[in-house]
Length: 308
Ligand code: BDR
Ligand code: CA
Image (cartoon, rainbow, N blue to C red; front, side, top):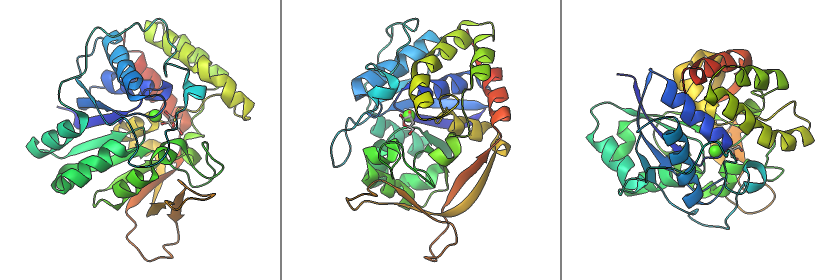
């Protein structure tokens, strides 16, 4: 059996890559996919998770999560991911439906029932995980680690200060960071090192299967926006989390205290990194600082190449 994981996501183009990598890997035992609002609304992110899994021939169950932040205005990233969140016409409508159980109940039940600790891989706003921790604090002891994409040691992408997933729900993010659980963070400072350059896009396209071609075309959808920001190609933020679970040696991390700014103002939603441990608090998060991008793409293409 592989490493037991649950993916909490808001597909989303880069979330779709995470799903595909997880489906392809023999080293993971994906117990379920839970969905959150985020890139687009919850109905669409849930539909997109089902679309991708169905198209890949996977029967991993999908559980629908919460549809809004604990507090604050609704934000989305439809400008980056398209109105449906996944503009990939070849990946048709889903043929399956989400499970009747909601995501938070599924997470709590599965963690409580499991003999082994489970790794939670989060690639959207952290509201589902925060609700789980508030409703059932005992489950923290059953979590191997929370590996999440969000925040940044430097600048933001939703505001000058804040990264999108954090900005969606900074309060939930702080609840998750405060949990007594090991954590690994992939912020923009890291994920902007993992770019789909034209050569990498071509290599993916040339894998020789439907997945390589369709996923390379999906990158084409959001590359314009990254080019306009001065990047060589779009960043594959979310799949860094799955890649770390499979091959942590691809990333350099450093332990530090991380908090989120929850006071409104210019820095609302920004992650604050105590790299020198100035506050003397527990260094509870391993923050990814450097990626072996070539190694990441080798791993990812190897996995995508196994699919349809
Ligand atoms: C994050 O925001 C979303 O748009 C992406 O899917 C990723 O999780 C990057 O800031
Ligand atoms: Ca995401």
